[in-house]
Length: 256
Image (cartoon, rainbow, N blue to C red):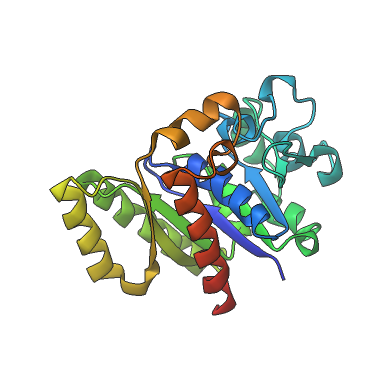
């Protein structure tokens, strides 16, 4: 059975795409058949997977509005090893076009149903807003992975996201649940980050992943080369953290 997870947070700049790309590559390196869905019109996950979004003739936009079948859109990441449904700025137009389509919030779910048996994990990189695109991601997923920085404003955004997930669970996708919170860009020297981290563990308990991804220059450099950080420099602290996170996630899904 395929495990479909959204990587989501309504706050921007919290490491959603970095987490999506590196987790996909780490899962592939762990022997898991993995598909990454780039659901963000910025196409950063696509570029970070060594695929030039500017040269795409088939993208997830075409899949969602019914212009292409999944087989025409799906490509392999040459650097990450996983498969990807790539994105570019065309996807921004899908927000408008989906409004008038039937089952508009379940278009991605119906597309992924056709390939779910091909994969152990399907990861969906969502845009930083509760848009119709994010709603498609939440309706297609079994669970949500929430990357977040240990800062005060992140706690406020987390509350909004949890409420949104509860609404989707109640009205559109009864399978949806929070898989866990991943602390990213963590600097243990900052007292506030230590305090927020402790608050998360106190409030969410086992929902907080044990793995903590540190702030790491090599992870930040990798996208400029169009390569996942776990491939760019496997020995770096950031890459090792994502490899550990992949192992933890594999163990966690066995208990679901």
